[in-house]
Amino acid sequence: MAREVTLCFPFLHYIFLYLFFPHHNDSIPRTKKMVKTVLVSPPYRALLLEGVNPAAKELLESTGCIVEALPKSLPTDELIEKAKDVHFLGIRSKTQLTKEVFDACPKLLAVGCFCIGTNQVDLDYANERGVPVFNSPFANTRSVAELVIGEVISLARKLTQRSEEVHKGVWNKTHVGCYEIRGKTIGIIGYGHIGSQVGVLAESMGMNVIFYDVVPKLVLGNATKKNTVAELLEASDYVTLHVPETETTMGMIGAKELAQMKPDSYLLNLSRGTVVDIDALAAALRSGHLAGAGIDVFPEEPGSTNEKHTTPLQGLPNVILTPHVGGSTCEAQTAIGLEVGHALATFVYRGTTAGAVNFPQLVPPPVTTNTHRITNVHLNVPGALKEINRIAVDLGCNIGLQFLSTEKKIGYLIMDVDQDVAHELRNKVSQLEVSIRTILIH
Image (cartoon, rainbow, N blue to C red; front, side, top):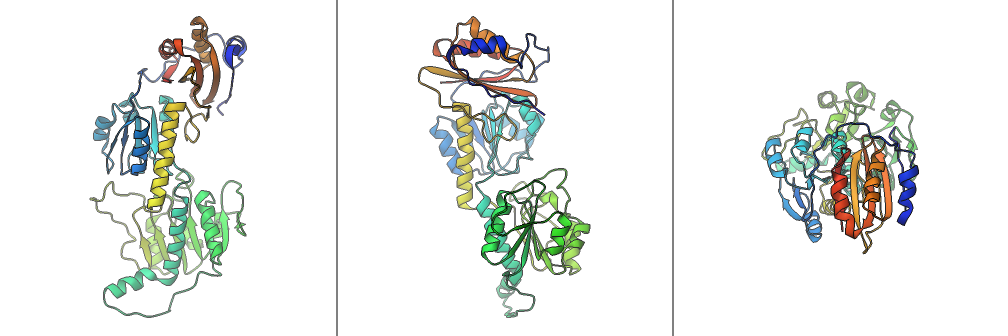
């Protein structure tokens, strides 16, 4: 487990740190850093892909950034060419940020995922490169939860079938196989931000709420926790999935689990496409074991609207198929644009890393008018901080405050220093063998 330390040393107390800080000894192992140091300065450039909400562009431009926004994702070779000189990269779920991409973008300071998921980014390598990755875990919660409830009602009343029939001129006024959702049981697998909101909305409509999660959760309303997935499946009229993509969740709903569901029950997946075995689901629907399904995510999804999408679920009755639009509302996308855009701006103009999914978490106060701020990402090795403070001592630099936190292979340092030596200090610190990234904020 990574060791984490947070420090705040006003004024001349850096001398104490220099002499006595226990986490760093006199010698630095000659571990070679993975990144060639590239000094970057404003104006910063941002590239926003996949139709990121204009609110993000406006926010970043208001801070002085030069922003280019494109409506779609790019193939790797085009992405590298476009992003090689940018400082911020904003993406949604389609763009893949691999080791190859990071290596080709030496000026990249931070990545913004304008969505919940971050599995499209090599987070460990981004950490090694000193690049924090921010996402938006809350902004689309309500939109996804509302869509779940809407689909539950649509499935219960076979609304998509009735609508399609009337479009074809068929007047099939029937109640057969149509039910109220009041009094029915909804089982929620993954009781996080979205899952718990689904429970609140479902309970307000008279449904019984049960849930399963791998970690303890605060129970909202009258929801009841189940001890196993199997226990939940056997008791639910509707099963809805709200889990991240991990090694344990991939394929977690297969033929065995579908067979454990109640006859004439329904499955909804608005989480990650790899969670459900689509072929097994199609078989369960064709056999009549399940009465319907709502699927918003798929194991493989088109990269653009020009690509045709195929799935074994197409053409099956009472199956709602949507193109990964759970969070696609005007309200959610605006909120996501502002949330992630603000995270990127406060990182580069204050050094804040709160909310980064792969980085030490630091929230410093605003930069004062009589100091400049230096942020430094360095290898997490003994002696790194002492080397940095030795440079400050040699320059006769007064340190107004200093924060340090470590995670995995890196340490992240924030220090406010005298303005007259800030530029020289930044340059010398960036030349250290352990330094990965050094930014001057003023």
